Image 1: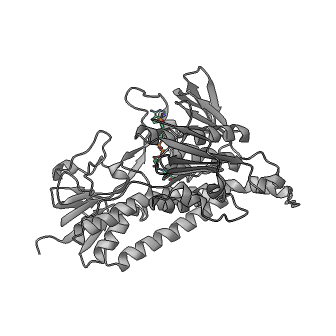
Image 2 (image 1 turned 30 degrees about the vertical axis):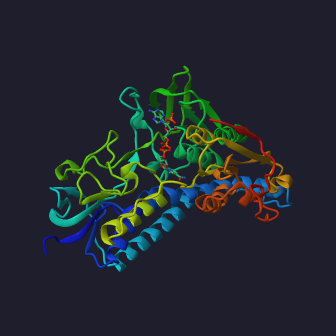
Length: 460
Ligand code: NDP
């Protein structure tokens, strides 16, 4: 045989693992290199540990709500080392499952870093071994950036942590500054707040979560302020210093904020730095992302890339979907383009913000005349719980056809509801389809099928 393997996958995260298993199941000879732990960002220091932290952070409010229902738990206490140890145990278990499933599919796994030597040859750095493959898949993911950009270098930036370190801090910081206004910043701000830290969110824009529906962003900002998070908008660091155990962040507004940890959540950069892809003729984009066509093929026809390293949509299910499409295209003679439409996503704040489909702005930008249906209400739980919590739901509908273009929810269980709504949007359901669906009472989700009165209409 001309090559050692039919497929060599670089990276053992969501995309790489799925692609290697599915390709091996077609009978292909597949190998995979992972230099650290199987499972990638999602399992080891992303979605899964994050969601466990989110659960941990919500018990304090649940205990408060319980009082309205007659419960008294006495003095509730939280122990950070217990959470970390239990989280680590669960992550190790999941990592083991990933490794087992890959091996069971017949994939050869190298615990090593692979770099390109030429178009078909990879060097495994620790082993000093060369391997060749007919096809290669780059699935190396991305990593939190510490760079504020070349125009904006912050003295003391190295004193900050990123989400990677936040998962393994020795102790819960009493005062945390979170920089950024995206998924990670918002999620960690709520996690630390729920666990008892004083949290300030420092964001350069006018409201967090750029790209999300504006009403949802406003609702989130109001909710954060009501909960007691300090939201500092139009704010950027100019200098960070450390004296003793404390950090001092100077901002463009002239404040100096004292805190115990500063978490940078200002985006992620593709892991392509040390791959030496130029030796294989693979082109990178401006941010260092691997450039791919609609089928995830790079500028070298036998080399492909999926997941965060391509900087298309940085979401685990999207990486898995791209991996499945890659295997269809490259190993099953069934060219399949990943579909990046109607991808639901959720920001796991408390409560959650979830959405699928178009925002008002996006729909108008694409030339749709729209009808908008909105509903805001106090969830039943909180009537006895007593806290001032509100849910906001919104449907964006194409006026002429009635097709539901977007569904946006800020409220408890928003992610669970939006996952189901995504099926309806995929089926191109109309508002009339939503209306003739019988409600499930009493739920929050029933609002989606009982919003009869249009809130307003807009034309492009
Ligand atoms: P995002 O791209 O979502 O957000 C980055 C944030 O940092 C933005 O608010 C951006 O501001 C701000 N920012 C960027 N550069 C600077 C700078 N130089 N100075 C100050 N602020 C800056 O990145 P995240 O790191 O939060 O997450 C990365 C990706 O991971 C997400 O896009 C998402 O796809 C994925 N993810 C998904 C999760 C989920 O599904 N629940 C959870 C976590 C991550 P501005 O808006 O002004 O550009």
